[in-house]
Length: 189
Image (cartoon, rainbow, N blue to C red):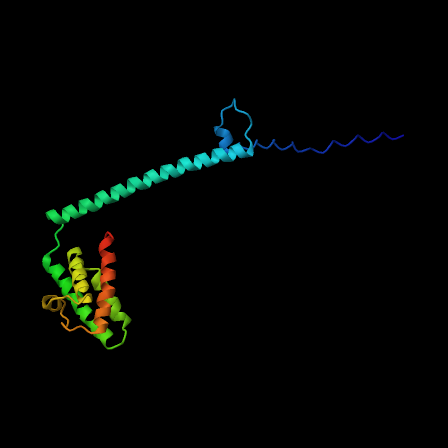
């Protein structure tokens, strides 16, 4: 009989994949001492809450430090302006005031005529925020005096408006007294 064929060589087998690495323990469990009992979900949540509280306190402290630094920089800036490090000429302040007063007269005329011009009102507000703090305080006092009908002729002359204000002007003076009071109470940026 013919000889039996030789058995075929077995097909190569791929090596098994390496075992997957063990999952990392949760952060709270990693921080727990080795001698402690296994963490329960509740104790793990408490640890995470405590960590969040510590982080929040650190953020609050950092925010307070930034606020103190901001106030120190604001004071330093003001001191530089006062001592001449950065000089704002009085002419510039007076020019800004005169520009504002021109817009004020335009707004009062507009209101007396019963119309509204958004562009003029925006220009008026833009001129208002350019004024120096002292000028804002002066305007606050002037508008208050007009509103309570105790303004002198000098106040009307300084603002360049009639010393016989109509209802629209009195209403505007009331609104500006409130608005300027809020501006004066808030620190400027």
